[in-house]
Image 1 (cartoon, rainbow, N blue to C red):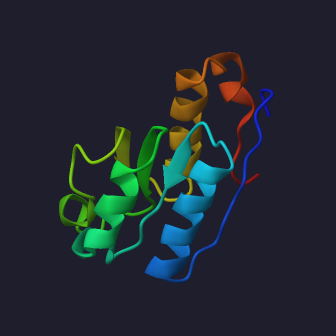
Image 2 (image 1 turned 120 degrees about the vertical axis):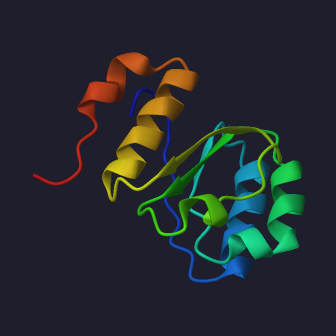
Length: 115
């Protein structure tokens, strides 16, 4: 899409997410959409991993459950935005923002979720 490659990783644990963050850095990713899960804000390893990222990220939460509490600490790494509470559309919005940031805004209208 837009001359960019998207890698999607389903992570079932904090360890899996941390492994994916490290892999993204090693593989030259330009941007990360990160859904850290409900318990990431209490795990200091996330802060360390995000501080070591060389690329920006958008933190995505698909629901509004404790939205403010669930956010990672602001200012860690290169956060561009935090998106809460739009269900699957949260990811569409985050991807649109990421594409615009990467200079690919003309492609954002080609992103669809559902029917």
